[in-house]
Image 1 (cartoon, helix red, strand yellow):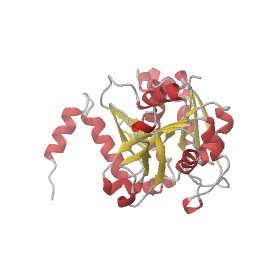
Image 2 (cartoon, rainbow, N blue to C red; image 1 turned 180 degrees about the vertical axis):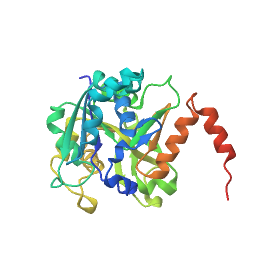
Image 3 (spheres, rainbow, N blue to C red; image 1 turned 45 degrees about the vertical axis):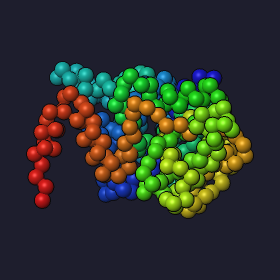
Length: 299
């Protein structure tokens, strides 16, 4: 079955972006010239996804308004010859059907909850999972997107899930889920995970391969999440559900990828790094930004 659906999670409170996130959806904070959420949606579309559900916090209408074409604004832009400034937003709605799903205050807390709420949207089909505050930046466009690379594993081996993984320093593995893998002689499946340990002590991590931000989730994952089993801090965690499936013998593949880097925009420093990286790698801004960085006077 060709995977055409994606779920983007955008229902967090964005506490690391307070006070601005008290009145402004964190995923709408711009990275360069467009909201970080738009980067995520464009990545999905570029990867062949045509049906997208965005799970937002109850009462938040910023994202919905952004994706609706403001006819008054569009008419004005046409009159002044700047209608092209809205082209990128128009392309989103032309190339994908976008559904907004609300996560209520009464819903269980945790990063697995959005996938439970989008269960009807999936209709029992495999689906791409995407964190809305992580953007993928392609630094080698000759390589497929991260999603396309993961889908290759899914189509060939039909596992319960394909979970993107990235190697991190040992000092950082305690912030992530850590994978252990079957030995190559014991399996014919590449990057076949036999253990997923959430936020282990650095000296007890099974490997430095950390859970990352893009997933292919088969129906078994959504079913497991729907049991609403809570873990750390009483929350429902996606990684816990996947770890339980591994423990029951379900196949989970956790591969790295090529040609792209991940930028976590959930905090101001990550946001700043992403802006600088994108500016330096854009012909329109490279010279100006490079010169600016060289001229900064540090105290």
